[in-house]
Image (tube, rainbow, N blue to C red):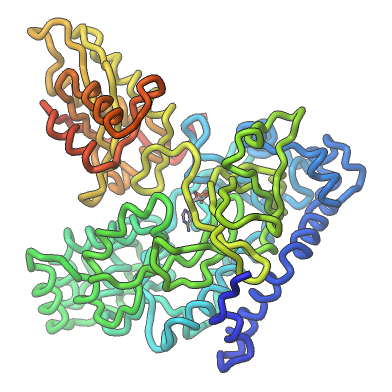
Length: 598
Ligand code: AMP
């Protein structure tokens, strides 16, 4: 078993006492994966033994793995929807968890167009906090001196709502930033941010971004790392600077805050930070007024040692753009987490993005794995439960779907992520994030699957009926060449009467109708300007046949050929783009409010 020697040898070496404790903890957890997992399952099953959900499967007090695996089914969100709805409606009886559900975490994964609601309990905050507390001790092994400066992190809270029964429903990071764990965190020289809490906690995302960027500019010499949760968030911040740098330079020159920032607590805290500094204002004007924004991150923040952003999974599409803006700074993907559960961390955070592997911490939940390449194991029917593998028993190079059992009451829940085992740290497997199941298009937090795209196209094509026109074939593409990225839909149309063909106005309305039909996370990202207007590119008749010919020339079987519903391979893009006859964009923002439609 390959062991990351940097980490193992650091335990006991000259690291700070705090770091040594954290590294020791990682060593203990990863050496004792199986026994920790057994203990965690035992704890979850004994404390939740009297929940309505577990009683249904007649475990009769058993807390062992065999009984659990033989009696409790593997489930999806849709299977749990009735229980979740009852909790949301105010039923406080112990349905899924013996501990009261403290709030719902709204996932960026959707079900029937709405965000999934993940139940959580108060103590989960401690588990999340514990995982966060391991990140810097690992980073300090690779990057010295991070206590000598600050981190410029763009962190935001999002809209929250209440369920009919009065429970809060909000994203997991909003819940974390608003918690005392975050707000009253003790001073840690390795975790000093340029953004004061007031700017992160400002509910207006534009004012929040404005103030956080302004702080980053003012403290530019102190900044040692620049980050956001996901790559798309950091690119959004850069675009914000591109659009607003004149105003920032003005504020810095005069020492006055843009009057559009109206939040009193942000104004109050910025008044302590902002002082007239014409020299800095001139520097910002000089750097930002240049046409060329290559290396803008290192030009403005010259002491940056790395970018702290997730660029694995759907975010990998942003790596070239981030390399361009940062002059090739390392990109650290530090952790792997979700609304259901925080999973683990990257023990070699300075590795290349293509080599990132996450180590799941066995104390976070009970983890099982559905072999992904074994088609017989994919059947989740209740009669023949699929054979799931335990964390300690995984095999290198195999792919698995992640299944969790959490303290908050999710039992054998399919997260939907496909992971590949790349190796081990002690006895703990390490995982490459391969993909999320059923995601066709993603720009920011949005995840659009094939059936959602199909439905959106059907809804939009209703507008073509009066023009005796129909959509013969379609495919899609997530265009992230510009910020914000946008969805491109290629349409081949059958127009019966060329004299009555749909106009640009009609096709633009089709774009809008598609946007209206997409899920709530897509619409929210649109309204927040994290995704640009959807585009339809109409291609010449016969284009999709050419696409098939091309695929067959490259070895696809004629019998089994299916039109790909999403494309990204350059020769195919070039073929499609060379056949475009017209382009149309959505003229307006789709409808979005924080309230759920159902
Ligand atoms: P959410 O439930 O909205 O918090 O989204 C969680 C999902 O985001 C996970 O199940 C993954 O699909 C994705 N995700 C989280 N962390 C990472 C990561 N480090 N790399 C790739 N994908 C990630």
